[in-house]
Length: 154
Figure 1 (cartoon, rainbow, N blue to C red):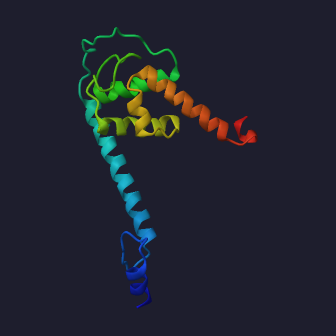
Figure 2: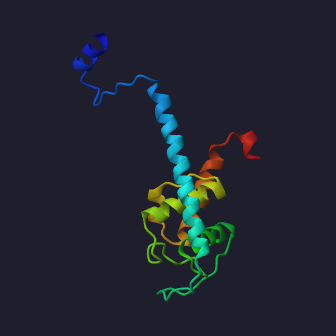
Figure 3: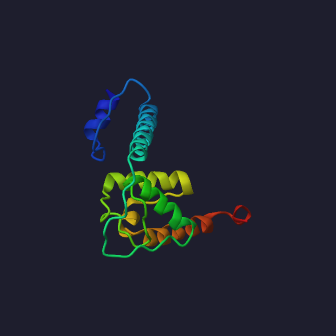
């Protein structure tokens, strides 16, 4: 009765959940399962893409400019795998190549695994070329290094 009274008279609870088991553990377990499912789908997607033949670089408005540093090379390699295109340059636009939000999520996940960074989707969408995104990633790495205690930054 006490729980019902609290629900009825509390105006700050927008939703009510009744669970026989520990609800927090249930959420965590489902999130882990969801993450495992996503990782499995991502691996299947990459495998299907790798089995496809690579295509020559499409005719784009911008000329091909090769990656200039390790971050740009990593990004270009990931995009080449995802799009099955032989050459991705630093001025190539993710969306002009056929990218969408699902592919962006896969790229972000690959970057999380490869570079150990957390790249928000908004920052990805705001920097749609390899060169622009590499600068954003450099900023994120610098921000993360600045947040480390001094003894760990060395």
